[in-house]
Figure 1 (spheres, rainbow, N blue to C red):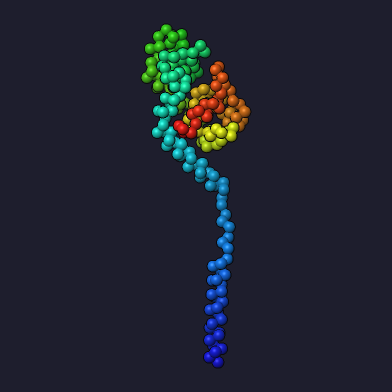
Figure 2: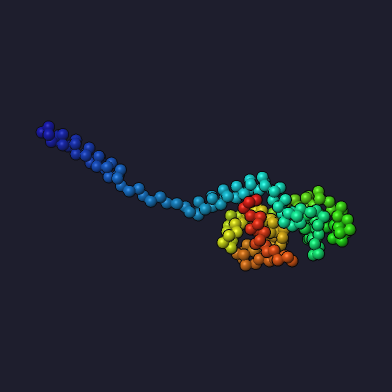
Length: 200
Protein backbone atom coordinates (compact mmCIF):
# COMPACT_ATOMS: atom_id res chain seq x y z
CA UNK A 1 0.00 0.00 0.00
CA UNK A 2 2.81 2.41 0.87
CA UNK A 3 4.47 1.62 -2.45
CA UNK A 4 1.28 2.46 -4.32
CA UNK A 5 0.97 5.78 -2.44
CA UNK A 6 4.57 6.65 -3.24
CA UNK A 7 3.94 5.95 -6.94
CA UNK A 8 0.83 8.12 -6.88
CA UNK A 9 2.92 11.10 -5.71
CA UNK A 10 5.93 10.23 -7.86
CA UNK A 11 4.08 9.97 -11.17
CA UNK A 12 2.93 13.66 -11.32
CA UNK A 13 6.43 14.75 -10.35
CA UNK A 14 7.91 12.78 -13.27
CA UNK A 15 5.37 14.37 -15.63
CA UNK A 16 6.32 17.87 -14.49
CA UNK A 17 10.02 17.14 -14.92
CA UNK A 18 9.44 15.75 -18.40
CA UNK A 19 7.48 18.84 -19.40
CA UNK A 20 10.31 21.09 -18.26
CA UNK A 21 12.84 18.91 -20.10
CA UNK A 22 10.92 19.05 -23.37
CA UNK A 23 10.45 22.77 -22.98
CA UNK A 24 14.16 23.31 -22.33
CA UNK A 25 15.17 21.47 -25.49
CA UNK A 26 12.33 22.62 -27.72
CA UNK A 27 13.45 24.99 -30.51
CA UNK A 28 12.69 28.66 -29.91
CA UNK A 29 9.96 30.02 -32.15
CA UNK A 30 11.22 32.20 -35.01
CA UNK A 31 11.04 35.87 -33.91
CA UNK A 32 8.74 38.05 -35.97
CA UNK A 33 10.01 41.44 -37.14
CA UNK A 34 8.14 44.45 -38.39
CA UNK A 35 10.55 45.25 -41.21
CA UNK A 36 8.67 48.36 -42.30
CA UNK A 37 8.85 49.79 -38.79
CA UNK A 38 12.55 48.95 -38.48
CA UNK A 39 13.33 50.62 -41.83
CA UNK A 40 11.37 53.70 -40.78
CA UNK A 41 13.26 53.91 -37.47
CA UNK A 42 16.63 53.49 -39.20
CA UNK A 43 15.74 56.24 -41.69
CA UNK A 44 14.68 58.56 -38.84
CA UNK A 45 18.00 57.88 -37.08
CA UNK A 46 19.90 58.66 -40.29
CA UNK A 47 17.94 61.89 -40.80
CA UNK A 48 18.65 62.99 -37.22
CA UNK A 49 22.35 62.27 -37.75
CA UNK A 50 22.23 64.31 -40.97
CA UNK A 51 20.58 67.24 -39.18
CA UNK A 52 23.23 67.31 -36.44
CA UNK A 53 26.09 66.92 -38.92
CA UNK A 54 24.65 69.60 -41.20
CA UNK A 55 24.57 72.13 -38.37
CA UNK A 56 28.20 71.33 -37.57
CA UNK A 57 29.38 71.46 -41.18
CA UNK A 58 27.21 74.09 -42.84
CA UNK A 59 30.09 76.61 -42.99
CA UNK A 60 32.37 73.99 -44.56
CA UNK A 61 29.60 73.20 -47.03
CA UNK A 62 29.19 76.86 -48.05
CA UNK A 63 32.96 77.27 -48.41
CA UNK A 64 33.17 74.17 -50.62
CA UNK A 65 30.29 75.48 -52.72
CA UNK A 66 32.04 78.84 -53.13
CA UNK A 67 35.24 77.08 -54.19
CA UNK A 68 33.33 75.04 -56.77
CA UNK A 69 31.45 78.06 -58.11
CA UNK A 70 34.18 80.71 -58.24
CA UNK A 71 37.36 79.59 -56.45
CA UNK A 72 35.89 81.62 -53.56
CA UNK A 73 36.34 84.88 -55.47
CA UNK A 74 33.57 87.30 -54.49
CA UNK A 75 34.34 89.57 -57.49
CA UNK A 76 34.01 86.84 -60.08
CA UNK A 77 31.43 86.79 -62.89
CA UNK A 78 30.78 84.71 -65.98
CA UNK A 79 29.44 85.55 -69.45
CA UNK A 80 26.06 84.02 -68.64
CA UNK A 81 25.14 86.70 -66.11
CA UNK A 82 26.16 85.02 -62.84
CA UNK A 83 28.09 86.97 -60.22
CA UNK A 84 29.96 86.67 -56.95
CA UNK A 85 31.58 83.81 -55.13
CA UNK A 86 28.37 81.76 -55.26
CA UNK A 87 27.60 82.77 -58.87
CA UNK A 88 24.16 84.22 -58.21
CA UNK A 89 21.81 84.54 -61.16
CA UNK A 90 18.96 87.03 -61.43
CA UNK A 91 16.35 84.64 -60.00
CA UNK A 92 18.50 83.85 -56.93
CA UNK A 93 19.14 87.56 -56.35
CA UNK A 94 15.40 88.26 -56.49
CA UNK A 95 14.40 85.67 -53.87
CA UNK A 96 17.17 86.74 -51.49
CA UNK A 97 16.28 90.44 -51.50
CA UNK A 98 19.16 91.53 -53.75
CA UNK A 99 17.19 91.90 -56.95
CA UNK A 100 18.43 95.49 -57.25
CA UNK A 101 21.97 94.24 -57.94
CA UNK A 102 22.53 94.55 -61.69
CA UNK A 103 24.99 92.36 -63.57
CA UNK A 104 26.57 95.22 -65.55
CA UNK A 105 26.75 97.48 -62.50
CA UNK A 106 28.58 94.68 -60.69
CA UNK A 107 31.09 94.43 -63.54
CA UNK A 108 31.82 98.13 -63.19
CA UNK A 109 31.95 98.06 -59.40
CA UNK A 110 31.80 94.74 -57.47
CA UNK A 111 31.56 96.74 -54.23
CA UNK A 112 27.82 97.22 -54.88
CA UNK A 113 27.49 93.57 -53.79
CA UNK A 114 30.27 93.03 -51.23
CA UNK A 115 31.30 89.66 -49.86
CA UNK A 116 29.38 90.03 -46.59
CA UNK A 117 26.19 90.68 -48.55
CA UNK A 118 26.90 87.67 -50.73
CA UNK A 119 27.19 85.51 -47.61
CA UNK A 120 23.87 86.85 -46.31
CA UNK A 121 22.27 86.24 -49.69
CA UNK A 122 23.55 82.65 -49.69
CA UNK A 123 22.11 82.02 -46.22
CA UNK A 124 18.77 83.37 -47.42
CA UNK A 125 18.90 81.24 -50.56
CA UNK A 126 19.67 78.07 -48.60
CA UNK A 127 16.75 78.79 -46.27
CA UNK A 128 14.45 79.51 -49.20
CA UNK A 129 15.39 76.33 -51.08
CA UNK A 130 15.15 74.25 -47.94
CA UNK A 131 11.64 75.56 -47.31
CA UNK A 132 10.59 74.73 -50.89
CA UNK A 133 12.11 71.24 -50.59
CA UNK A 134 11.12 70.51 -46.98
CA UNK A 135 8.87 67.50 -47.75
CA UNK A 136 11.39 66.14 -50.28
CA UNK A 137 14.21 66.40 -47.73
CA UNK A 138 12.04 64.51 -45.25
CA UNK A 139 11.04 61.80 -47.73
CA UNK A 140 14.17 61.27 -49.82
CA UNK A 141 17.20 61.81 -47.54
CA UNK A 142 18.99 58.49 -47.23
CA UNK A 143 17.71 57.06 -50.52
CA UNK A 144 20.15 55.87 -53.20
CA UNK A 145 19.84 57.14 -56.79
CA UNK A 146 21.75 55.97 -59.85
CA UNK A 147 23.31 53.17 -57.76
CA UNK A 148 25.86 55.52 -56.18
CA UNK A 149 24.28 58.82 -55.12
CA UNK A 150 22.93 58.92 -51.58
CA UNK A 151 20.47 61.77 -51.21
CA UNK A 152 21.50 64.23 -48.50
CA UNK A 153 20.31 67.59 -47.33
CA UNK A 154 23.41 69.41 -48.57
CA UNK A 155 23.32 67.55 -51.86
CA UNK A 156 19.74 68.69 -52.45
CA UNK A 157 20.55 72.27 -51.47
CA UNK A 158 23.64 72.38 -53.70
CA UNK A 159 21.68 70.90 -56.60
CA UNK A 160 18.97 73.51 -56.02
CA UNK A 161 21.60 76.23 -56.23
CA UNK A 162 22.76 74.80 -59.55
CA UNK A 163 19.42 74.02 -61.20
CA UNK A 164 16.64 75.40 -58.99
CA UNK A 165 14.40 73.52 -56.55
CA UNK A 166 11.76 72.69 -59.19
CA UNK A 167 14.33 70.72 -61.20
CA UNK A 168 15.47 68.94 -58.05
CA UNK A 169 11.87 67.88 -57.37
CA UNK A 170 11.55 66.54 -60.91
CA UNK A 171 14.86 64.68 -60.59
CA UNK A 172 13.58 62.92 -57.49
CA UNK A 173 10.10 62.14 -58.77
CA UNK A 174 11.45 60.77 -62.07
CA UNK A 175 14.04 58.63 -60.29
CA UNK A 176 16.89 60.61 -61.83
CA UNK A 177 15.64 60.62 -65.43
CA UNK A 178 15.22 64.41 -65.38
CA UNK A 179 18.83 65.47 -64.88
CA UNK A 180 19.46 68.93 -66.39
CA UNK A 181 22.85 70.60 -66.74
CA UNK A 182 24.08 74.19 -66.67
CA UNK A 183 25.84 76.12 -69.46
CA UNK A 184 29.14 74.42 -68.62
CA UNK A 185 27.70 70.89 -68.76
CA UNK A 186 27.56 70.29 -64.99
CA UNK A 187 24.61 68.03 -64.22
CA UNK A 188 22.26 68.23 -61.27
CA UNK A 189 23.39 64.74 -60.25
CA UNK A 190 27.02 65.96 -60.15
CA UNK A 191 26.15 68.36 -57.34
CA UNK A 192 24.09 65.75 -55.51
CA UNK A 193 27.16 63.52 -55.51
CA UNK A 194 29.85 66.16 -54.89
CA UNK A 195 28.03 67.77 -51.96
CA UNK A 196 26.67 64.54 -50.55
CA UNK A 197 27.58 62.57 -47.46
CA UNK A 198 30.73 64.43 -46.49
CA UNK A 199 28.61 67.48 -45.61
CA UNK A 200 25.15 65.94 -44.95
